[in-house]
Length: 620
Ligand SMILES: NC(=O)c1ccc[n+]([C@@H]2O[C@H](COP(=O)([O-])OP(=O)(O)OC[C@H]3O[C@@H](n4cnc5c(N)ncnc54)[C@H](O)[C@@H]3O)[C@@H](O)[C@H]2O)c1
Image (cartoon, rainbow, N blue to C red):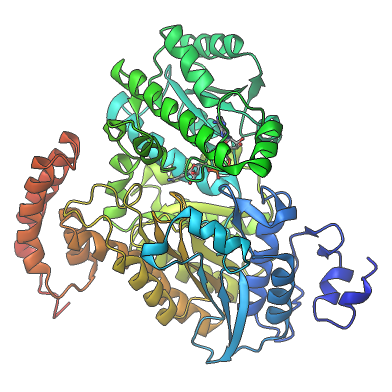
């Protein structure tokens, strides 16, 4: 490729001439192979470079020309100039340098040590009193800040597969609770086939059910058909509903997309008196400028957004209000209804729907996983070899098949259905202890040459100990600590101190500006002893901080995990008393459901029965 004059002599020139980046068309392509590009010849720098290119590859990113990876407007870098400066930095840094990134802009390089991270990021942070979208957009327009969602700015997004597992686990947990574990002959209705929402149809199909999902954007529907995540689609609501009911009747696992606004689909269901078995939603309600108001096509919405953003917001909020009212009606008719962490209930509540929070959040189903530090651990083959991922699938099945059949079923399903996007990747919900065990095995395999090259590890910010988001991950904590922001900061600090290859602290992911702060990391396991030492520390403290966070909130299962797997909590004895008290308080104050109350009470009984076997935290 010919390199424009402006880039000649710059470090990035080599990547432009190799075709990995075209500054004229603004296209970025995944870098594969064993040849290193960074001048340091160090995978700890090549790794972040490759993950940055990976998240912006057209097969991965939602709108790569605008650097947007997923989730409304979550970017990988603030601007193209910033992207280029980050790339130049990574190419020329040495193995003791640390690049500092402020909201997608590289601001400094410090010489630290081989034990410290190579990149540190803080993205979209605002002082709490100033933390709302309006101020954020004003500051963004001045070029001072930008939005990076969770894994977009942290270069840890792995395409729709990442969320596929989360959706599979969440809807699977709902199926366990309400339908004996299977969705066979069940209808699940939702909306949003975007980068994350696009996982819904396949997850529901994997669980045996029928998915009926609305989206206003034909391109997004087509994209999901092309990736094999969606089976079929139509622009006719009647036809879509007939197809779904027919499949439900025949107990055929399938997915149907319908080109329609979410509220149009729900209005139709109510009119026809059709009640879904499960009802949720993944439109980008966290950002009113991404949510499409009823009555507008995508093109009309784009125009109005530019010409009159205030009017757009007003219309979007009106539609969200109606959206939640319709969900409440279907819930009253018997649909198992929950919000999928997009802040839709809060938007509707602010617009006057007082009972919006009658709809529970997704944590009703995910909390038990988080209590034991289990969450979306993920990895990619940095050299781009799919066989490395398949070999690691086999390792996991051997390790965990007996202990965790659900995990093994996921891997087998993923093997069959998931098409890789960008670098081949896998995501598996692993817990405290399991991540370190697996990381050690992978490191040895890389060292011995049993894999073609290094493996990058990371996770979604949506994890056990890395988020404070009172309408999502930390909704309904037993002790009411939903809005306490210390925990994700401690998680970030621990992963940084433990020596992750890069660490990220973000604001606003998932539920929007003002509603969430959260941390993530990237860890390159390159077969060296040093990387292994660091990885084992990270894979211990990261899920461990989730166990600690939940233990301090009074979850008895976390106390059990801490005692039995050696997580040292100095005041653990006090937490037992707290657990007893907050379980009762949370139920009395209506912060947890009857189901959760009974579940945690049972855990407490189990904890108390095993207690005499536990040693004190000071001699474990
Ligand atoms: N908590 C979780 O685990 C979790 C997981 C996935 C997604 N989410 C949330 O779901 C939302 C969607 O995420 P995404 O990455 O898929 O977003 P995205 O921006 O990539 O896609 C959103 C999709 O919704 C469609 N859409 C917008 N308004 C609509 C409307 N009124 N009716 C029908 N379709 C509409 C758009 O056309 C687009 O295809 C976000 O708020 C995200 O935070 C949460």
